Figure 1 (cartoon, rainbow over the protein chains, first blue to last red):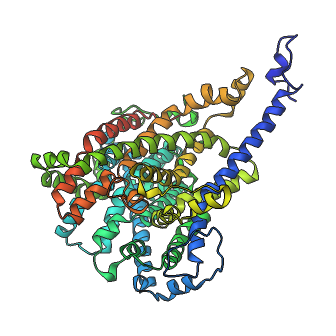
Figure 2 (cartoon, helix red, strand yellow):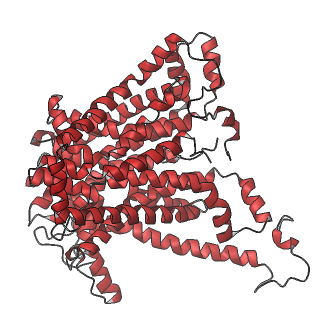
Length: 303
Length: 300
């Protein structure tokens, strides 16, 4: 026990409540409480995923799911149907998957590029009115994405991007970049200005400073921001549904939600497709978990 | 108070020039070149659509029509409840749970990975699963209630308020992990010495949270709450996929109602008007957020 323990500083004659070492009891109580919260949280987190598996593994395709809490007779047939694109709503499943992937990857690359360029100019070059421009990211969120979808739909036709994957990419980049800029500006505070100045004195142009100092030192934040943009695009449904009208350009998210249009759809196929669709972001997130920490640092960052 | 003391010299007030020399003319050109892609995106995909939208919804008669619609009024109440309850319950629970996740035991780390999967799981599969968990008498939730406790659960989507509650829970499920980790990062940035000093003064447990941790996180909490409010007002997926507005459009929020006006009822102008009618609520939130971010208030 350390001497700094406050309990030792109690005035003489105080009676310890309950036990001689109340802080040890308190610590043990804390652990029990943490474990209890942990168990509840585990069930809470896994329940929807369990439900997906339960329905996907059910053999009864056409009937509605009927009150079971345990897969009585599990079968992987629904996954076979998804892989083979064997059902009307799931035709060309892998083509749709490729569309989703293209949108997500393009959103990721463009968000990192545009976000890092803008955050470099705003944070490192600091124009006289830079703070004014720095407000633009928040202005973007003042009008929520879903409110903009109707004008967006019309504007995209004017831009000649109707039924184009790039229209969805444009929308995703628009709404993923502001958060990226906020995060990058926070993280950039950790990169010393002296490095930029030393390079400038050696005659490096801003482009060289950006490429050989800013980008390498910002790598963790860039990976985080890129992952977040990818997850954002993978989450998005409304713009994909409205802006992509042809079958050729349909994405998996839209294909899954389409099942709701039918009254007697095979829900096990829907859930199997949903699980397959959920796998890439989960895998990417688990693989890059260490790197994504910077993306959550809206507050101060510890060097 | 600054936990990043070593970067303190870089803090600057809005509008004030940072340390170092002023930008030379060619450098201003560089800065503008760096900003150009972002400004182009902002002009083409924010300014123009917003302007276009306001122009389409400029007719005051549209708003009279909205306010005469019973469904619209119910939707406004729903939206206020969805955002007010959803955001505040979520943020409060997140800041409490962040206390769990700063612990260093192995099982806490493992739990964090599982917990964050809720956030990494795409919205469509997650909310579709919620829909099937709660549907009718046969969903998993009612099945579990029957098997474990012998209770007959309600038919969740038969009552507008109950359906709204389901939407709120689903929304919190999806987004709480994100904010929890934001607060974990905020707590990590509190220097250990402060905890030690507090412990010497006898502040532990609940008292430490109330008098030490929360005041230090207050700015971050405010900024996150404002940002979450903006994002939640615009959330479309939850209501569209979990309750699907059932029963009879009584659990809609403005984002989904605007969509139905525009695409199911073929009244795009009315749809935009429904969405734009939320701006008087949203814009002040954005303005406060802007001020807090500008003042560098997110810094601990």
